Length: 288
Image (cartoon, rainbow, N blue to C red; front, side, top):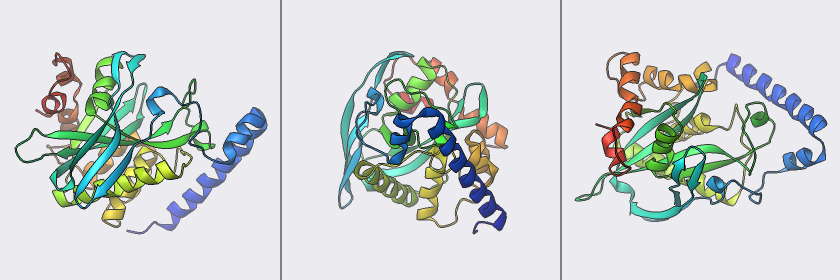
């Protein structure tokens, strides 16, 4: 379904507001901030979490994903950054899950991710998480207004679930919901290829993050709509990602387990995480 005229007007209004914010921040913050706004860069003093960019190399159905992140957390603020390469056959991707992490104190806002299920014959099932994120510099803190004024670069993080989910639930006490999508294996594979094309594109040419138009949720929606045009229709829940699971439920993007509230309750992984003694078999156990 194409955008309605009201949505187009709303989008135009948001762009004007973002432009006004941009001018205001430049006037208040001075030359250094103004210089940063001129163009996105790959060369800044990044936080270790974001210091390495992922890329993907394809040869037919075989893919080698470079720099899969697995930061091993010691506590909420201490971790050992690490990365590894992962090779597999794209045809072994069988499903994709939707991950929702509401912001503490403001559940209407959230971070969203997708996790690809890789199930090779005669081998354990594995998962690979991908998310669009703010690429923070050392000492930088995120703010929604700053995020609309060209203050942050956008990055795609490709990560081990023990990094992206276990760290949030066990060490940062953050609620996490894991939903199985209704995507077929073929759709999941096409989605993965589209996502990796974006990963490679950002590694070659940086972009600014934008709170309203270029964030974790809008990027997921754009990927879905590229492989299946107009599959996701926009409403206010796109601007409030904490409600995006309800949008996905209403549009048949996630598997229903009763009512929406029953589905949400079943997707809540925190109690399962608390029962785990280690990170081994983490992905398998939280899906029981």
